Length: 492
Ligand SMILES: C[S@@+](CC[C@H](N)C(=O)[O-])C[C@H]1O[C@@H](n2cnc3c(N)ncnc32)[C@H](O)[C@@H]1O
Ligand code: SF4
Image: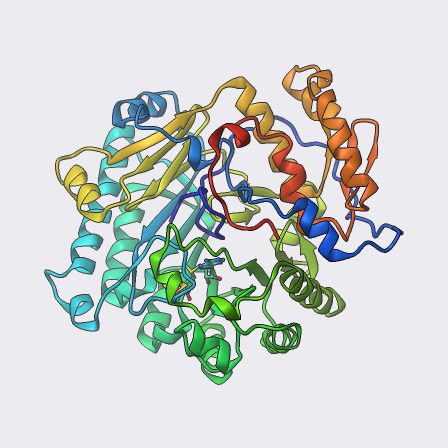
């Protein structure tokens, strides 16, 4: 669901190709000794509805003027040796979770099994799309990262999975040690699929957990006991599938600080390498099934913030490093190392250590990112399939990036990743005068007065207290925000 029109993890927009030179690595955000400020007052002031900045410009700025011809023109300038990342989207799940904001639909087991069913057709179209990319480039482009997202990519089953991975290896030149990641639903992951993942070199998996509390699970239409998740984690490890991420959520119906802490403790017991702790994005005006949730049981903004802080505290006490807005990782994990060294990136998949400046998006709704701009495939599966069957990229919209966009994208990305920013240094790298941002200093100082950040000249650093509000600081650099008038989910 590559749409940053509302904030979702692993479902935003592709990497910025805007990091010309590494900035000095910032020190970790330091706790500030601020006058105790009521959380409710902070939220009232800063909990605006703003994007998650998985790209800049965000998907709201995409328009139909970017077409297949635009993408082909951009591709013509891509050096043959440039390493790229691949994102493949599979928009199917067996059952819909009622909180879900991803681009997916529910399909029955019979529909999955049918050899002429929607999943089988989708797999064939993905293979044809991979051939289309290789044909347009006239070569097998080197690939360093492959990310399978959804929906639930593993729904395709072991045989089709092997076929897909072999087809991709035919069309692209995977670098030795390339990272191959997949988002998985533990409820539908069986032994044969785990064997296929291991056999095809998948070395990083992300399991959707969200919450272990039975009442919360019932309310969101996703029942998966702790024992089930623990068994799938053990099976993945036994098969040699390495890096494990768990997705957790706060702000779901019936969640409380106590229940989130209990879930966080159980998640820690599984000893993951990474944890993503996503704030539930309630956007029922875009995702109608979210109206099935008991809205009266949704925690309010102050309760959400308390839930986030309680879980974050627990993770850090257990030795995980806080990364960016909502991630935690073991200190030796590549994501934590990238964060410590100022190399963390933010893209369509969320936070990543992937340095590749180019992303090819395959599948319905996927977004490709090139130095010149973003190009998004048609979101509707039939439109995507028809275009690919006719030998065309299914580009429906996108945006070309201006030099001004590139500078602002860099400032926003560094702030979202480092929780710190040297405006003057980043402007210098882009050959720009930092004075153009002088008008933002009063707003930054207002955040500083509230204990959310520290400012020294052109340098700002979010405080520990301010971490959940980093999107508010990033939004100050967004030249489109006011003009768009778009509704996003809550910032906190
Ligand atoms: C594609 S799913 C992960 C794989 C698999 N489909 C599953 O759910 O187990 C990506 C993640 O997005 C998060 N997510 C989905 N809807 C969300 C929403 N409305 N707000 C915040 N996070 C959401 C969940 O944490 C979910 O695990
Ligand atoms: S399984 Fe994952 S993608 Fe599918 S509905 Fe649930 S959260 Fe969304």
